[in-house]
Length: 90
Image 1 (spheres, helix red, strand yellow):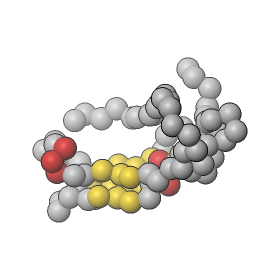
Image 2 (cartoon, rainbow, N blue to C red):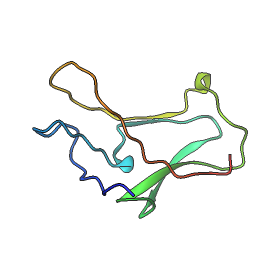
Image 3 (spheres, rainbow, N blue to C red):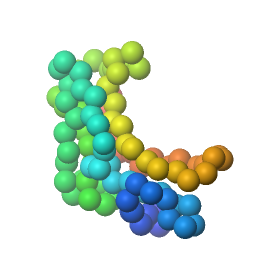
């Protein structure tokens, strides 16, 4: 198991690490019958976000359902993105 990340605000630290809590999204794009819901205390740190209600047909990119996170980077270059996801039955 990987070590727990240290979460910071939306600006990289001097060593280039940026970690954002799932609950700290900037914007939520819902569908007509699907809403993003915050679930405190679920997951590795402060909480998680889930699309509800469950049991609906899968969405596709054209549906536009997403969470957006604003970040500030100070220089161009490549990076590594790690997401912690919880499995579902979908």
